[in-house]
Amino acid sequence: MPLRLATFNVENLLRRFDFSGFRRPDREDRVLKLFEIGDEAGYRRLEEARMVGLADDTRQHTALAIADCDADIVCLQEVDDLQALEAFEGGYLYRMMGRGYPRKVLLPGNDGRGIDVALMLREETADGAAIEVGQVRSHADATFASLDLLTPELAASERPEARLFRRDCLEVDLTVGGKPVTLYLVHFKSMGPARGGIDGRAATMPLRRAEALGVRRIIERRFGAGLAQARFAICGDMNDYQEKILVEGSRREGYRFRPVAEEGSALDVFSRDGFAENVLTRLDAMERWTLFHTRGATERHLCQLDYIWLSPALSAANPQARPEIIRAGQPFRTPFPPGQEVERYPRIGWDRPKASDHCPVVVSLEL
Image (cartoon, rainbow, N blue to C red; front, side, top):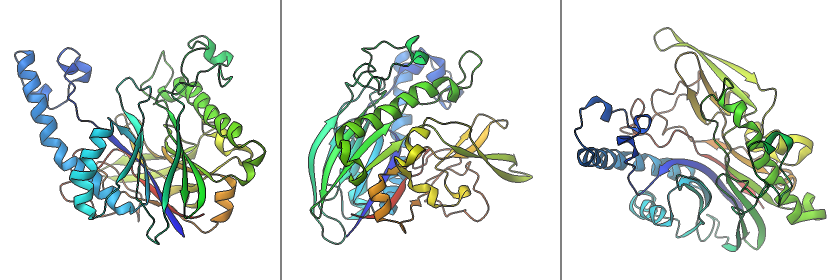
């Protein structure tokens, strides 16, 4: 009774326009910078046209990537709201697959831009096992104090009563073919640019580590002495990595790829002492990447930001399970290590349109 489980950051699945670029040049889209725009009304009309013109290709690519996962359950990040998800699933995904995801779970979280984590589910697996949704719990209200996570490192910038998760830790109990499994959907604090001479990843590491500790604490409190037997998976965009592949060279002379292990990561919270297994470690180190990061020619690497962490019980029950990473929706600017090239979806661009800046991850699991 295999269950196909996927996670995918769909990159700003929004149903609203953002006009803030008119007054904030750092938020103005690059194509609008090419034109002289006289007033805010004109800016709004052009921004609307830009977004509508780009969105159709983008969401066809997003739907193709999800269709290629062929998952029974899809964990999503960066979804505007339930209405946006319904419009995307009905207007794009269902038309493409002929079989949609009639059930969806989304609760508002803490993100300032209003992007949330969400879940799409089929009514049954490909083998006909019923998928039933049980209790759904948002932990968006969890605070540093309630989870006892206000470390001295964070005390200077955070208050005990402040909310811990920058989006949410959405806990969803499921029963698949009569067997229970619990999913934890997350989207951790982004790295962002350098702060005060410290690179963005290092500057935001304490908060991501606290979020990971918070997820772990929620799970440990939930299952207690039964933790070793619990079936759970932690899924989402965790905005950190334990290793990366440095990209050197150029398009003209050719690219070179060099894997590098990181000294520390917020995700060590999950990997240490066997608490959970990053299922992508079953692939070769050169194959685990899900995103291409670049800030010019001097800062380029491939890395894994998207994860499915399996509980010890799920991991032990699936020793041969190998995950898949769907990369056909990546833009052509993404350099692929030798032997990994794929045929891109029709109309994929150099930078956009694309399915997302992230790649979806999927794995088949026996419960």
